[in-house]
Length: 306
Image (cartoon, rainbow, N blue to C red; front, side, top):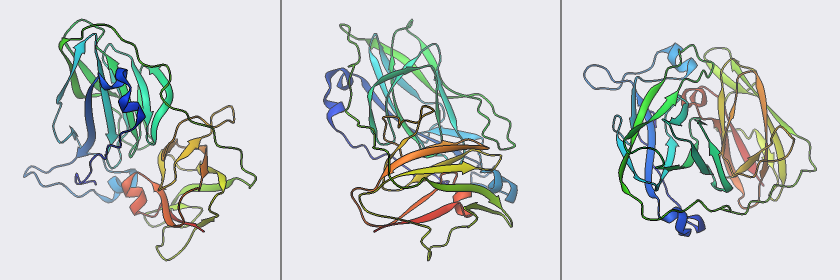
């Protein structure tokens, strides 16, 4: 993945058949960074770069530098975005435009949510609806500075340009309802705690252990609903990803946010709780930090669903 092997799998459903969504110009954006040498060969990261999570100066969208995506005047653009970078976060903003978030990792939200910006951690996906409501022209899709804790100075840069082309006949708004998502019920079991730490000898750990493929770290029962709490003791953010089983993030009010996720950012020196249901599959799965160097240096665990 750090060398570019990533892409999108689009699963279409009810939201795609809604006329207000279907009329929008749909664009797919895969965000990646690279660190090529003068001869074009990708440079291997140093030990320190792996510790903080490699970041390259060449930022691409679908393998191109600063491509253009179109929107009609008074129409809508649907931007389906994947952060396929090894470490960088993208704090997204469209110049002089707000946008509506209509979906995240696991599918559509219950209703559109208007935002001015959106933080996209490694591995996360988001769907944005942007309206061509300004004067015709070209507007930058920016990544604003974000300090994830690594000793890398955060900068602002342009990912792509949203260019007005043509004009939309008529006027339409986004639907008020997109999907039905029930909050997961509170579990009867205790909260499982996962302490994220930086270990000795170039390692990152979960509950004091680095990854071993021949060991089961967490065992759950099929049909169970559990609360997991990630406790980040390090000075860097860690985007935690759970394979196979989508979850809901517990909000500041103690209630699950009605959105299906499979990656959640855990900021430095903080804790984040998720609620997860193991309903459909038995077998072996994984959970890990989606900063690929941290995963490779041990911040990963094996999950057995019995």
